[in-house]
Length: 109
Figure 1: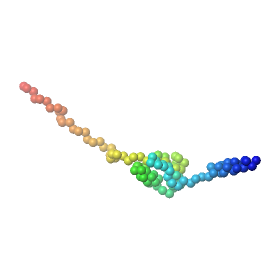
Figure 2: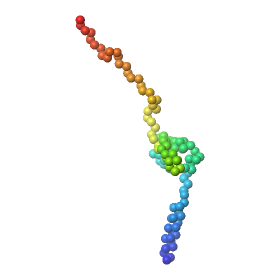
Figure 3: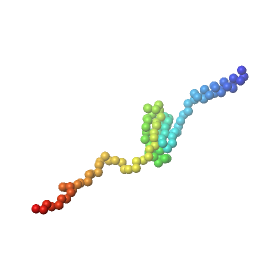
Figure 4: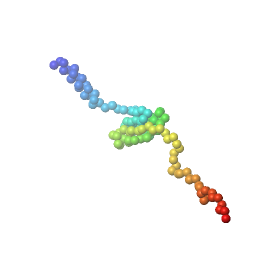
């Protein structure tokens, strides 16, 4: 019976350890994105937190899931900045063709 006490103690300690909650207070992520825990959201601007994280890698942040969709956390991805200038929605004017198209030789008359 004495052999069961250490095993029982380990099982009870493991069960109690699993019940504790861990308060996360820093962004978990890497160069591809991350998760902002709920407690950090209450005190800060989510876009600036994600932007600061991605700026360490030379990328821009894009929030993919809001706290209401994930149970309190915000999920974001880090994306490479656009290589070209932002589009204005206007197209460049088309090249004008000379009137009449191609030149024709005068008719002999």
